[in-house]
Length: 534
Image (tube, rainbow, N blue to C red; front, side, top):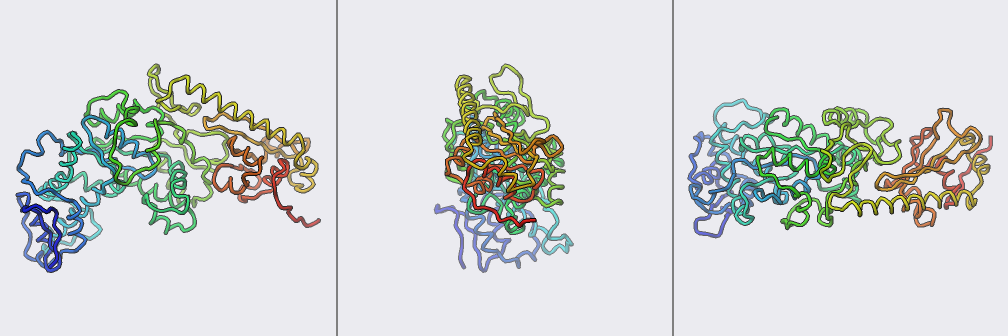
């Protein structure tokens, strides 16, 4: 018979598998920590102990100490903090804030929720074994007080050495799977607090695609990739929907134990949001923690966002990046379900005009407005916060540089069209008659939402009859410069989301007549399109 040992010490806790039963494992766990074991029916002795159960228990590395010892003195293991969220939503930033608090310790993602769920299901099976219960395998697990106490004790033993090393009193967890097992966590820890972290669905999609440029994997995406092969937008959006539905359902059941936090509020009003979090947790306030968390050492050996390790402060620059995600990739039923959840979270819906707006858009319907005079930028649909750690002079310098970049790129576009390095307006309407009398707008847009527009009219009317250009082509100064210099390809830039073509006449083709016409005007390389003479 093989066995899994948790420690090399003489008092090590051993979980056998092979000829042993699952009941042996649970009894061994309870006996080791001198717990009062629940009564198990005789029939449960026939339940074999799986290797998976033993390995789950083994990776816990529970120290061989007496549960009645004083090692836990001063620790608040009865009221941990769990962050319930989807990936790419700012959970690592939340982790750094929590971990920088003098009372709180938050390690990388440990998967503690899955371990808790495995033990809970094991215990539930054993308690009902031989009882003649008609409980379905899909029914939610309801733990007895004895089962919850035993599991809680085992999980606390995992965190006790970590708290000792950190010199902290209370542990937190931001594992991405916790939102799926929150009900079990709430039973095991009746005094736990839950931070429900959300981010707009389309910004999550944009972040997920950026994090997985060679194909979606990790971050919980894999099952949804299989569901939507070839459609990264639908796959990540479906993942977000599943997470958001689970978290909202849990929050509705336990409103007093949950605090809803939006990523957008966190990065536009960081100090106010952090203060609200610590108040909810009953922890002391730490002014300036949103800056200090980037100077505080954190455990780096474990899953989490990699990009944040190479940043120096909180910025709102990533808000609204989902505007470049093609809304048409969402199936109608999926979009409808997502919009229902977005409405509950006070986010903008994903409508037919989602991709049409030039500039950046705040995805919140009602942004959190912090008190004035606190040194932090106001969050609103018209104004995005600069990084909070930068002095005002630095922010002003950046704004000035962005405006200069935009103006320079706009002048370069105008010069290219005026100098006729490309074709003439007459040649454009000859090649693409559908554009005769229409107009196209070129937009140069900076990261801080400053932008300039150039309208090119192909005839006297200049519009599509509604007073609006038939197409708007939007890109950052660097993208326009790369295109003009011949270092970039229009389709590549569109596919990557760095260039958008909002087309009211031909919204379904990537390579529309309007895009060909713009390329021709700017003298960009392209192969002539064969036309059948009428």
